[in-house]
Length: 337
Image 1 (cartoon, rainbow, N blue to C red):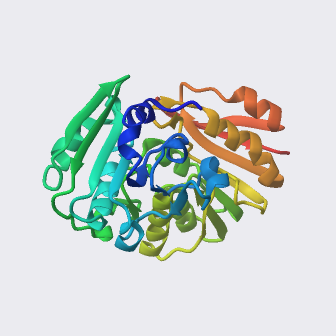
Image 2: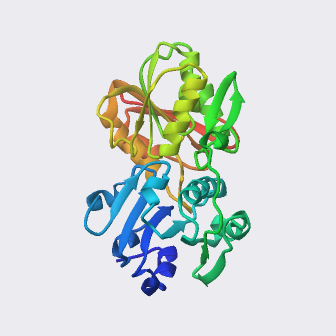
C-alpha cells in the first residue's frame, strides 16, 4: 500500500495510536485511516470522494460525511489527527469547528506538507494548543499537542461576501474564489448573452458566481450547479439566496450524480490536485461532457492561456474554437453539431 509523505510520518508513530480512539479529518489523500491500528477510528470527509466508498461503516472504520462536526459526533474520541490542506484559511475554518467540539485534554496531531503553510499552525492554534514538532521529513511536518481550551465556532462568521455586477457572492474558506473574484470566471461570464436559455450545467460551481450571473442576465435559463465539496455547495446556495435566485444545487464528483442532458455545460475547472498541477479534472469534464449534452449541445469553459485543449476537443466535438481571450485566460467553445 502506497501512503502519502504525510501518512508516512504518522506511521512512524503507529505504536502510539494502538490504544487511541482516533478521529481523522482534513486533507487525507490515502487509505491510512483504514490501516492504522486503533481501538476505534472515524474518518471525517467533506467532499464527494469515491476513495472510501467501499469502506463506509465497515468493522475497520466509520465514515462521517458532512461539512461540519458536532460534539455528539466526536464525544467518544480522545485523539484528533488532522491533515493540513493547501489553503490556510480552510485549515483555520475546519480546525475552529473541530476544536470547538472536542473535550479539553484531547490529543491533537497535525501533519502537512511544508509548502502548505502547516508551520503556521503553531501560531494559529497557540490560544488553544501548545504544539510541539514530532517529526520533520520528506518535506512534511508532524506536530502534536493537548487541547487546553475550547474555541468558539460560528459558521456565518466565516462567509466572505464579494460584490460584483450587483451580485452578492458568498464564499466559505477553501472554496475557489474565496480571496477574490477570479479573472477567469469574469472572462467566461462576459461571454454569456441575454438570449441564453434551456438547461445549463455549471460544473465545479464553487461560490456560484457563474450561475448567479447567468441567471441574472438570462432569467429564462434553468441552472443545475454541481461541485464535489460540501463547502462549495453551501456557498452556492447562500449566493443564490442572497440574490433571490433559484437553481438546482447538487453534490457531485464531476458527473457522478448527473443523469440528465443539457443544452450547455459551463465550467471554470481547476488545474491543481492539492499542491500538484493536474489536468485530469478538466480532461474528464471535456471528454465525458458529450454524454450529458443534448444533440445540439455546447460546452464552454475557461482555462489559462498557456494550456491547449484542441486535441481533446477535436476528438469529441464537431466544431470548436476560442471565443474570448485575454493575456492570461481564454474561453473555449465546443459544439456537438
